[in-house]
Amino acid sequence: MREADFRSDTKTRPNAAMRKAMAEAEVGDDVAGEDPSVNRLEAMAAERLGKEAAVYVTSGTQGNLVALLAHCQRGDEVILGDKSHIVKGEGGGPMVLGGIVITTLPVDNRGMLDPDQVDSAVHTDGTNYPRTRLVALENTHNASGGVPLTPEDMKSVADVAHGHGLPVHVDGARLFNASVALETPVAELVKDIDSVTFCLSKGLGAPVGSVLCGSNEFIDEARRWRRMLGSGMRQAGVIAAAGIVALDTMVDRLAEDHSNARRLSTGLAEIPGIAIDPDALPTNLVFFTMKYSNHDEIARRIIDQGVLLGARGGGYCRMATHADITGDDVEYALDVISSTITEYGKN
Ligand code: TLP
Image 1: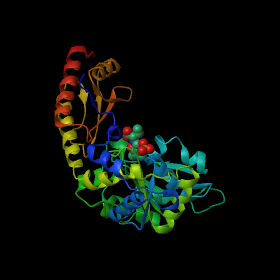
Image 2: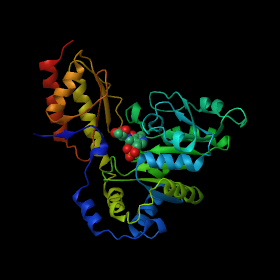
Image 3: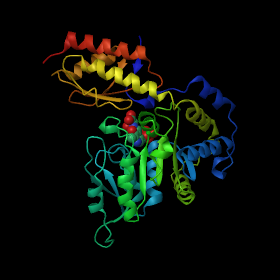
Image 4: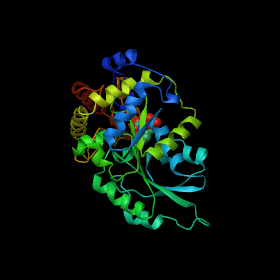
């Protein structure tokens, strides 16, 4: 049966160039800083993002966790958007492992924090309140439909945070999607940001890994935390090699994913009973609602025909485009969704 996996851009499999690079990777002991492939990947990432240094980590979750642990002590507070992946999707790691207090502020429909609210939320009295130590943003913002925040957005929050002497971390799991959508270099996007994680294993298609970037001093501290978390990975060049191919060859093609997502959303908007705003689609994540009483059954029937989508309850669905989804897969998905709804949709 034909299968197209739209559940997430994490579902990509390494391509032939990545597999070749992995097979031929030069390796060494990364815990001792001796893995040439890891060192190269980290240097490339730092340069690309305009930061002094970078550290290769196992996942986006680990990149964010290590960043928060490196910025904060136990009992310190991080200000985060209430729909951020760090709050909703990372198992509470910063609270559990770091004793870090998470304070959330509401984000707007783009996933943006209100700088004035951030300003008022900062606690400088470290006796009664937890001491605010960090502000964090997410770009693109997953739960808001992959909206890219602009350099001006990021600066507006960074100015407030820096005014209080606080650094800003960005969960940039899909930072390159933002960069391509805004036609803005990644370094420009994060120029006012102190630390940033981006994922190699999402739109960039690598099998494993993320990179955390920041100042030399911050990355030294992050390495210490990565070690404590048990992720000194020794000959990690085998996987870093695929990350190098991802950074070298998979960034510009993200525009294709964005155009596939646009086609998907305009096609979905034409299907009766699907609620979606096709204009609100900036990158590779398509969210929509199936307004049918039997939405779970419809989703199951669509999935049974090989169109794998993320059904999130209440008829709310997400489909992500990525390197393993072609324009033809999008047409196939639209056909399957449309015919399934026509045949089985119940009001
Ligand atoms: N997002 C995944 C998972 O939730 C399954 C997805 O499919 O969207 N930050 C953001 C904004 C993310 O979307 C994700 C993963 C992460 C961090 C965590 O990355 P990983 O999964 O590599 O730990």
